[in-house]
Image (tube, rainbow, N blue to C red):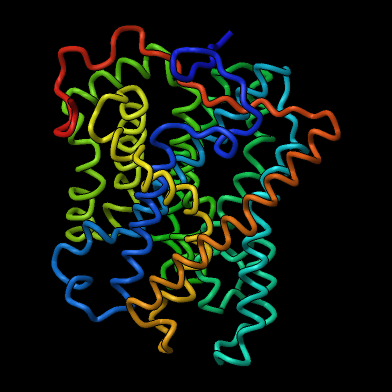
Amino acid sequence: MFRLILDNQRVRRTDLGENSRVPCLDGLRAVAIILVISNHLVHSSDMWIFNNPLSFVFSNGVLGVFLFFVVSGFIITRMLIAEHEEYGEIRIGAFYWRRALRIVPVLYVYILSVVLLEPYTGIGVSAGSIVSAATFLQNVSPWADAWPFEHVWSLSVEEQFYLLWPLALSAALRRGRGTAILLAIVLIAVATASRMGLFVFAHGSFLERRVGVLSICRMDALMFGCLAALTMGMPLFERVYRWATRAVWLLPVVPVLVSGLLAGAFGNYYTLSVGQAVDGACIVFYMTWLLRNPESRAHAILNGRIMVHIGLVSYSLYIWQTYFLHRLNDGWSGSFPVNLLVILLLAEASYWGIERPVRALRLRIENARGRTVLSTLTLAPSPRPVNSGRSRSPGSR
C-alpha cells in the first residue's frame, strides 16, 4: 500500500487542514494572500511604496492565486487518495458536504453584507452579479458585472474543481494510479492549449477576455498540485526532485522574479504558453523541499506563528479584501491604511465568528452520524536522505 506519512509516522486525523496543521502549507497560503493584498494595494493606492519599479516582486497577485491553486490541488488530492486507500473508495457526498461548509458560509455572509450596505455606500450590485457569485459562476457568467464580486472568479474555479475532480479521480483510481497520473498530465496540457487557443483565435471575443479566469484555462495550476500528490515518492518524481533541488534557492526566485521579468518582456506569449508550467513546477518542488527540510530557515519562517495565523485566516482575508482594496472604492473605507486595518479586523471576526463555529458544527454532526473522515497529508519519503551534500537555500541551517 502506498504509505501515508507525516513526521515519519502514520497519523490519523479527522480533518486535513482544519483539525491538523501541516507544516509550511499555511505559511505558503500566507505568502499567497500577502501577494494578492499587495497587488490590490498597488492598484488602489498612489503611495510610492506601492508604485515603484520593484512592486511586481512583492505584489504579484497572479502568482498569489496560482500558489493558492497549487496548494489546494495538492491537499485535496492527498486527502482523496488517503480516503481511497483507507476505504477503497472516495465518498463523494461527504466530500461535497465538507467543501460546501468550508466555502459557502463566509462567502454568503460577504454577499449579504455587500447587498445590505448598498443604501449607505452607493455601491450597487445587480441581481445577475449576486446570482453569479452565489452559484460560483462568476468566471463564466456574462452578468457578473459587479466589482465587489470580481475576486469570486477564483472561488468559482476552485468549486468547479471540487465538483469534478473527485469524480474523475475516483474513476481513474479504479484503473490504477497510473491512469490518474495520466489524467492530471492531460489536463495540464489541455489547459495550456486552451489558453493559447483562445488567446490566438478568439481575439476580442467574450471568451478571449475570460482566458484568465475560465476553469479550463486555469486548471493546470490545480493539476500541478494534484500531480505532485499522485507522484510524490515515485522514482521519476524523486529523480526530477533531486535534480531540481541542486540549486534549491532558484525555485522561489524563478516564479517571483524571473517569470515576472519574462512576462514583462513577452507578455501573454510567455505567461500563457510556458510561463505557468514553469511556475507550477517550481512551486511543487520547492513545496516538497520545504516539507522535507524542517531544519531550514525558510521552513522556520513559513511555520512561524504569524505566518501560520495569516494562513489560517487567508480564506476570510481573501473574501473581504476586494471590497476595501478596489480602486473604485473611493470612500473612507477604501483609503489606506484604514482599508487594510478594516480587512484585518473583518478577517479575524470572520474566522473566529463563522469559520470555526461552522467547522465545529460540522464535526458534531459527523460524529453524531458516526462518520469519521480520514484526512492524513501524505509525504512519501525520498528513497535516500534528502539534499545530503547538495546546495541548500540561503536560509538553511
